[in-house]
Amino acid sequence: MSILSNPFFYGAAALGPHVRFKIWGAGGGGSSGTGAGGGSGGFVSGTTFQDSGTTLYLVVGQGGPVGSAGGGGGSGGGYSGVFTGSTPSQANALLIAGGAGGASRDANDAGGGGTFNNPGSGGGGLEGGQGNRTGDGGKGTQSAGGASGGNGGNAGSALQGGSNTGSGGLAFGGGGQGGSDGSSYTAAGGGGGYYGGGSGGAVLDGQGGGGGSGFILNDADVTDGEFTQGVNGADQSQTGGAAVESGDDQYVADTNVGGAGGGASSTRIGGNGSISYSIDNASWVTVAYSGSVVNFDT
Figure 1 (cartoon, rainbow, N blue to C red):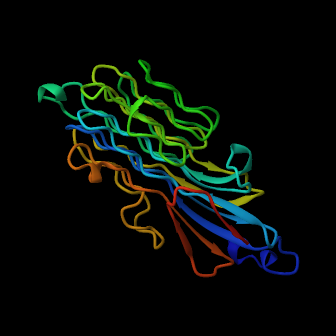
Figure 2 (tube, rainbow, N blue to C red):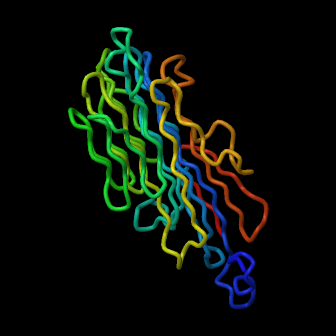
Figure 3 (cartoon, rainbow, N blue to C red):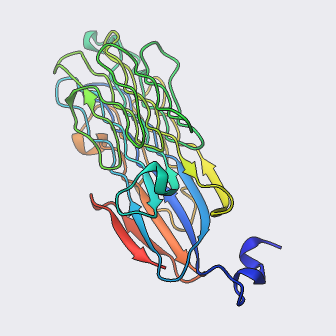
């Protein structure tokens, strides 16, 4: 018998309303010039049991902003998550889907011979993704932020992706800022998460950002929790990471995806996150990115 069909949770002894969540983190931004694409955000689902009238707070992550013209690294995407306090923190987190890392331009692109192989890494998942090149930002885990890629990069921290100054701007939900000198310094920002991913370093022309980690509170508070890790931007391509769980009925078109590399700035922005919830099997409610914390009562 599944938890959702167990009469204990619906009878007089029930703990209160059950709230089912499906949560998508935001995608990382693509780099300018002829650069690589950002990663896609992670996905998490699960059911929480709350007293009637409990207020829950939602953060829907912003897609990673694009790097500045002339050679900017993309910013990391923001996490999406559910919290029991109006000021989100690790201490009051119930569920978090990690944001993806932004992308940078390949070392050889300035000379026209690059292979575009510095994409952003996917968001978490139990942990974020990370690239395998020297200078890529590290992945966020359950216990620490992703390491800096060095050379101007910063490590991720609690809920915050690492930044590399000079381009793009921070994303709501902890996405770190990409870096640029307007020419060849194109390091990318790390994705937000339970622990954020590290930013890429300015090695050669810059490196990709690491993905932030997801989070599920212990089984006493969240049941049937599941993770899906986001997808890295395509190697040797300008394509951003594909959306995860895109076949789900609550998936919103164009969310969660990684921004494309190069091209128009509108295509380089990472897809925003999304949160859908259902109380006691009622109709689903979907909350889109708004740039602020929103709430509802159970």
